[in-house]
Image 1 (cartoon, rainbow, N blue to C red):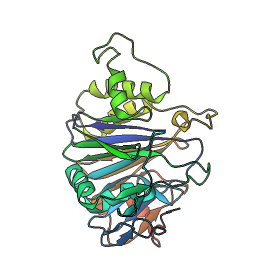
Image 2 (cartoon, one colour; image 1 turned 45 degrees about the vertical axis):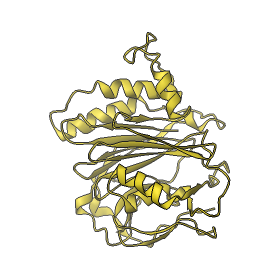
Image 3 (cartoon, rainbow, N blue to C red; image 1 turned 90 degrees about the horizontal axis):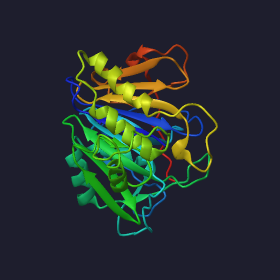
Image 4 (tube, rainbow, N blue to C red; image 1 turned 135 degrees about the vertical axis):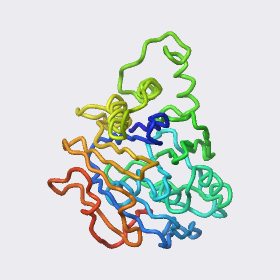
Length: 321
C-alpha cells in the first residue's frame, strides 16, 4: 500500500508526492486541524500521551477517523504507509500511549522540522498502539515518513517492538515490505544503483521502490513551479497501481485510489483522486488555522484552488480502538 517520493532538486523548493493504494474507497476528506487544541493520544488507555498543538495543518483522513497524510503551516509533512512487518510491541504502561491514528498528527501538531520530530520521540518516549482497521478488521500495521521544507527526511519503522529510524536526506523514497534496510539492499541489484538487472516493472512494493528511486533521481529541474508539480506527479503515476481486483490478503498491491503532492516550500497541498479527472489544491497561507474546517471531497465540481470551499465543522474524532 502506497509510495512516497521526496524531490529536493526541482529548482522550485522541496516537494513530496504520495500514492495511497487500498482495496476499497477510504471516504477520504481534507481537514484543517487548528493550532492551540488539546490532544489525548489514546482515550482508552490509562496513561495516554497528551499535548497542545503549536501548529495548524491540512490533513487527508481515512474514514474521518485517522490522519494518513498531511502538511503543517511551517512545512513539515507526514505520511503513513502500510508495512506488514510492523510490530509496536507489548504495552508498557510506564510509557505514554499514542494511538496509531494520531501518530502523524502528533508531529504535525508540535514539530517544525524532522529533527524536532526525532527529538520529541526521545524526550516523550511514547509507545505506538495499533488499532483494528474498521472495514477489514485487520490490525493497522504502518510505518511513517517525515519530511520538511529544508529537504530533511526520516523513515520510522517499528519491528519486534523496537523503533528503527532511518534519518538521511538521501532517503527520498519509501514503499511497503520489506523493511527499509532490505529495500536499500535489494535496490543495489539493479542498473543505475550498482547492479546489472534491468529496471523492474511489477506492482510489488520492492519494484515500486526501485522505479520511483530511478525516475526521481533522473528528473531534470523544472522551468516553472507548475511544471515541477507535473514532473513529480509523473513519477508518482509511474509507481501507481491500476484498477483491478485486489488481493484481499495483500493490501500492498491494491489499486491506487488517490495521491497527494505537498509543496513544502510554497505551502501548497494538492489532492488527486483516481476516480476523478480533476486535481484540487489548497494554499496554506490562505487558511484560518484557528478553527476546525473540512472539505468534503465527494462534492461535485471540485477543481483547482479549493481553499475557499472549506467549511467550519466540529472537531475530527480520532479512533483509538
